[in-house]
Image (cartoon, helix red, strand yellow):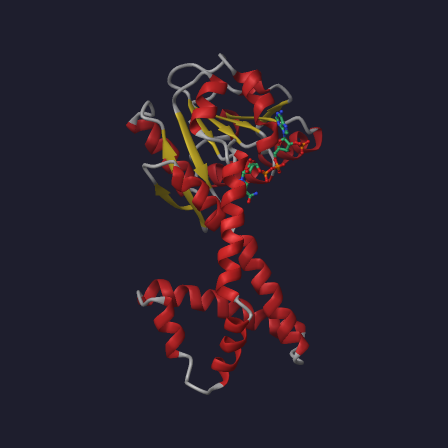
Length: 265
Ligand SMILES: NC(=O)c1ccc[n+]([C@@H]2O[C@H](COP(=O)([O-])OP(=O)(O)OC[C@H]3O[C@@H](n4cnc5c(N)ncnc54)[C@H](OP(=O)(O)O)[C@@H]3O)[C@@H](O)[C@H]2O)c1
């Protein structure tokens, strides 16, 4: 598969690395354009791919991955408008960029819009995606194989779910990292050595997530199973409840969702 990357930053590299790792393409069949020289040098040296500072020159693959920041999209679309041929699949990971905007800006209608997340760099990402009606079955399979290289993928027919996924799974790793930081800091505060605190927190988070997934039980039920009335866990949960933990999480996700939607305006 011939693949072009427009933007070779953090996410672009994660996708590129997963594609090569899973043998979906070869360094010779991949070109990356990035305005930053240091990124071009890094990607060329580490992966042996072709690099350029010209988005037009790069954009010749079967799949053209758009991986620039939302604020750079207008420039990129102006450069690529009219350059893409029928049969080329555009795969955009740009937060907030609507399919309609991409199709109009690029003058191209075979577009897949994806929201990946950063655990993709260890093959444990979750990517939520949708496609225009003009995307063929073969192109959907191409897109699916790229996303599977980074972990799990979930196709949604309605684009509205992409902005929602952005606020949940796209930004979600940062919420979990903050929770990990807070729990480790609390553990250290009550006297645990930092290395022990970190190991306990990480194993607890991984084990709890896996337990929800593997047991098939609702998280609320699992929570009640570890919470004896008047016991130790109840003390902590009462504090979190009184502090408005659930409401705060709701407010945070709504704020992220609104921001993701505004990016598309
Ligand atoms: N990071 C995440 O967790 C995540 C998750 C899901 C989706 N996304 C989406 O992924 C996209 C990329 O994010 P990122 O974190 O990879 O950003 P990033 O690291 O800033 O990568 C973007 C790269 O594109 C370059 N660039 C800027 N303007 C360009 C242009 N006109 N032509 C070619 N290259 C250009 C940037 O150079 P400069 O630095 O010089 O501008 C940078 O090297 C974003 O739209 C974001 O919404 C990110």
